Every structure is written in structure tokens, then in C-alpha cells.
Length: 445
View 1 (spheres, rainbow, N blue to C red):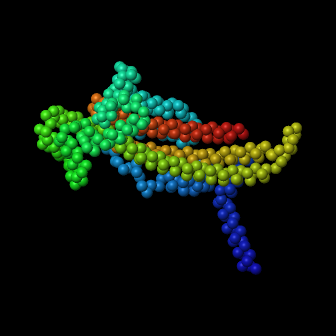
View 2 (cartoon, helix red, strand yellow):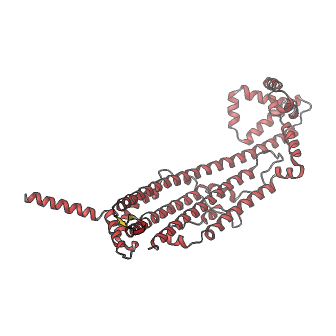
View 3 (tube, rainbow, N blue to C red):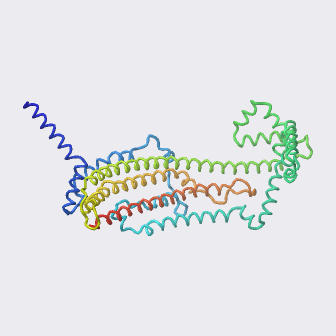
């Protein structure tokens, strides 16, 4: 009996110790103190601080954990820009961070803090758009010749195609019926088999011979494709030279010039395509950074929901226990004094254990996102350091435009900077709201 009694006492003592250290017991003590009109300083309450740190430890570790893969770091930016050149990284670094400390957010002028940066980015975007429009040959033609001029140039450019020429020209094709176009296309496909030079616009025997050899001799085609650009050019000229005497109208110099022009256009097209691929790589890296950011936001939202539910559950239990009292002419209702004390206690709890930590978590996640975005745009930033605007345009106003592609990449980076600033402002606004809500409740007594 004595052993059993001692065991029961020990069990009760353990249960009591566990209860004393629980969050609900701590909150009960806080409520008791507020009912007695005691001043509350949650920042120095060791029990509440310990509970808050315990509850945020897991989510903080989740956000700060290094990812297994970091696609945004595929390129290490050098950021070696002359002073006068466009430099995206310092501009992105300048995005103002959220104000997560609640008292500071409550007193801050958010428009004054964030709007100048947002307007600066919008101004950069406008300048970029105006510069591209000013240097765009398509825009220049439109301003001088209008839509009719663009239409005529479009037809003229289309008519440069040997295929289109052989089928009667662009205007004739436009006016053909579907059956007539199908018939013309079938005839063209048949003609190309016997005259491959039609595809390149060069009907001299040398080019025809080379094209036929490429189409019929697979080994030769493989060897040719492995040649450098200079070796390919020499091979083309060799075929043209060997057979030039067979056609009295063949002009080697003219054909070489045409070939050089085609090579120049091809190189410009290739250059523009390379910029497009660069933009795609940057977008892929930004998407990976955004995916991590969104994943962390979901984790934070889950944490907020869990902590909020715990506080709400405790509140519901305490509210249900408040007795009904006589209120004179107002009838019967929950004891107003106890209800107010409970509301103030909950306001303190949410302020200290939910809203404050929540805004710190969101701010940490935002800062991580900004850092990852800086890595993501590093390759683009290095590329534009030495980019020469307007140096890669062609006479074809409808051709590939390197400037447009570069501007598209820069515009995407500006959009990301604007998003960062807007989100930081929204977070700060939420923190400001939490501070106002807390002050409204706790100063009403």
C-alpha cells in the first residue's frame, strides 16, 4: 500500500510538472494576471519566450535549410561592369526589405519607404521601351510609311524567297484558292528533287551539284557538317569555281557576295537565338527560385494556421467557462470584465507568439528569395555589360532583332524587382495592421 501510494504521489507530481510547463498553463497564468490588472511585459516573460522559440524552431529550420539542388546558382555572376553600363544586380539589391518588427511597421510611412523604388523601376522600364522603340527599324518604317508601307515591305521581303518566286510571288499566292496553293506546292516539291539549288536561290550548276551530293551522299554530308564555317565556305566556293565555266551567266564574285550576305544574316539569326536561349535559362532559374519561395510560403501558412488554432482552442475553452451574470436592463450575458480580460490576453498571445514570429519568417523567406533571384539573373547581367545596342540589326525590318530579345530579358528582371518591392510593401502593411489591431485591443481597457 505504501509503495502504491508513493507511486501515485510521484505520478501526480510528474503530471503537475508537465502541466506547469505547458503552453496552456502559461497562458492561464497570463490571463489570471490580466484579470488582476497586472502590467504585462511579454517580451521579458521567460516562459512565453521559451514556448515561442520552441514553436518557431522547426519552421525556421525548414526555411533556412539549404536546397538539395540550387538551379539559380548555375551561373556565378562576375558583376564586372564599367560605371556607365547598365547593371541589374545593385538595382535588385536596392529593393527595400519588409518591415517585420511590429512596432516599427506601425509607425512607418510605407508609401514613403517603398514607392520611390517602385517608381524607379517603372522609370527604368519606360526608358528601356523608349530606347528600343527609337532604335527599332520596324518602328522607324511605321512612323515614315505607316501600315501600308509595312505591308509593301512585308510582301517584298516574302518575295525574296526563291520558293515564293517560283510559285508566282506573294500577292499571287494570297489570291490563290486553297486547291491552287496545294497544287503549286506539290509542283514545287517535285521541281526541287531535280533542281536542289532552288532552295538556296542559286541555280548555277556548281551549287546544284553540291546540293545533289549533299542529298545523295550521306558520308559527304556528315563530313561537310563537321567542317568549320571557314572550311564550309571554301568548299562551297570550290564547287562554284569548278563548274562556273558551264554557265556563261554565272558570276563567281556576285555569288560570293550573296553567300557572304547569307552567312551574315545567318550569324545574326544565330546570335539572336543565343540571346533567346539565355533568356530561357534565366527564366528557368527564376522559376526555380520562385518555386522554393512559394514552397516556404506554404510552410509558413501551415505554421500560422497551427499556432492560430492552438490559441483559438484555448480561447474557446476559457470563453465557455465564463459565467453568465445579471446586466440589469441589458439582461444576462457573459461577465464583461472576464470577456475583456480574455480578449486582451489573446491579443497579447497572438502578438507575441503568432504575428511577430510570422512576419519575421516571411521577411527571412523574402530576403532568401531576393538573394536567389540575384543569382538567377547573373548571366543576363554579365551579358549586357558588353552588349552594343543597335549593332546587330539587319536591313530586313521583319528579321530577328537582338535588341528586342535583350530588352525582353532585362524587362523580365525589372518585373521581378517590382514584384519584390510590392511583396515587401504588402508584408509591411500586414505587420502595420497587426500592430494597430494589438494597440486597439490592449488600450481599450
